[in-house]
Length: 371
Image (cartoon, rainbow, N blue to C red; front, side, top):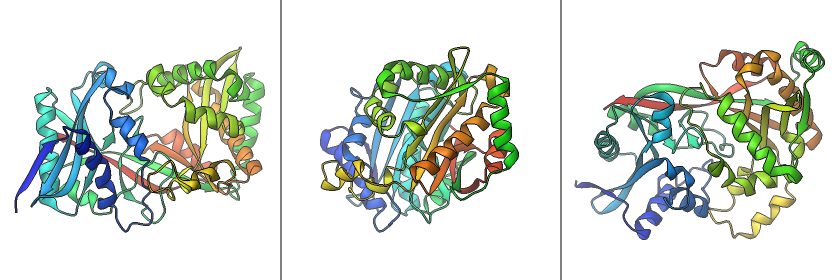
């Protein structure tokens, strides 16, 4: 049985690359079809500002003339500058349940990375930890939250069958609005606000541009030493400004900046689970169901960015954000929330979430292999 792997070289190839996800995930009611226009934009080397400091190649695998898998291989200059490690990444992985096809895809990605001078390969990342990342290895019984991944169960066997080993697990915590947090946390948070003279303000779309500057500043400071972190540029963030502006306008109560001495020291960004609607669109934005976006009562939300500048981490700002967010989601009528993703090694954050009643309900894995 002949297996061939080739580069994506044309517009038609790119369409097939995107479309293959539907074939690989066919029949999985918990899979959320990605939006076509968004995938095209992110994979477009001219449109995606990430390519200003990175490069990538996309590959398609065919078996007996039929499309059977896809993968990307990428190298980010920012990663090397930040960590001084020649680590390349793979991502956008989709494959039929065929170890030979998976092996061909992984080896092709590895060979491309070797030619770029890389000595290790990690993934899956689409394209960095700032995007969807990790392979779902536990928690297949529910659809993913917005900007989180979902995949067939057999994918982990395909990764490990080629020889990839676990590098890090990323955890998703769940809690419901009925959960009663540790009362000491609530008292602690309020006392800290008074003691350290910290004020909390909601994101406001009227001075949105200034707050995007705060976002970049806090993000690159707060996550600087986190495993796998890659700095984000203002251009990259602003490419998502339309979505963030909508959230700031419609759900300002969910998004916070902590201020001290008139300066932003931390942020917490919570987004409604747009996948509750996206799962109905089958990848097409121009669908009448998209109009529900303005009237839909979302059941779930996700705390997807909570960061504190390093010099302020001992002030207990995270506890303040947790209580403020819980109060907001109850007021807005949400039923449950996800806090993700959390590094398995981040003990302080995990303990704080668990004291707020959170528990791990999904696990995502990043794999690693020497080249």
